[in-house]
Image 1: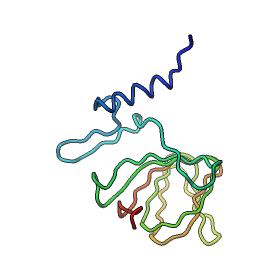
Image 2: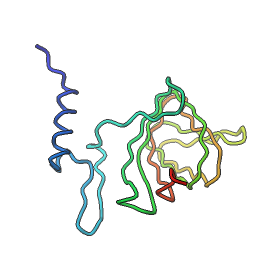
Image 3: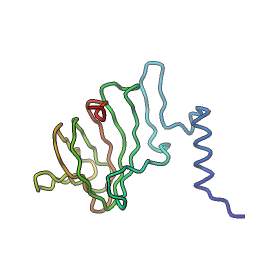
Length: 147
């Protein structure tokens, strides 16, 4: 019988998370509220619905409004995908790997590893990763989806 290592790891992570075992929890929070996110413990990202089923876009939200009422943050991974988005919030994207393209008014602005992209509130853009892009994002306000 062959063991499925990924499935076993996923089960162990879920159980450990429910039991609040720090070695598998990707966030470490002090009583002061200061939190460290351990990127190597993030586990699986959630599929992000762009409205196009073939898009490969995945997201991992890190903080919700209970933890941070002003800022939201997370990671996004995109592969061979492009989708339109209108922002009712300010967003800052830090490119970790690959190339993230922002298409606005027919013009393409590209950020590569180490670059930062600011997208102001009210922008209608296209997020694009012709190959692969992984980036960290911060949004203000945190409750952007409720606006």
